[in-house]
Amino acid sequence: MLYGCGLRLAELEGLNLQDFDWRERWIRVRGKGRKEREVPFGGKAAEASRGISKSAKALPPSHEEPALLLHHWGGKLRRLTARSIERIIKRYAMALSGDSSMHPHTLQHAFATFAG
Image (tube, rainbow, N blue to C red; front, side, top):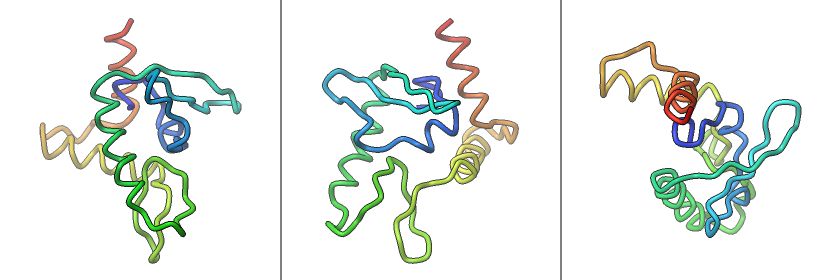
């Protein structure tokens, strides 16, 4: 989502399952200054998001967190924080390429360079 849609880290962190229009392939994104915008998403982002969405449907009915990205903490499912997302990106970048300088903004910048 960071690379494929050019989202900011905070925008990714704030995504909820109901923000997706799967048929039209649009995401409602809340950005800086509480502004909302619609962002198109492509096949790879759809594939990844659908997998997350299917997993979310398997959650117990008592689950109330609407977030797209979740983790277990303190015995509960909670929204993944921006810091946690950043750590995940750094971990995978290091494992795949040995590059410890990768961060979320790098992916957003790469999207802007590629799309522009």
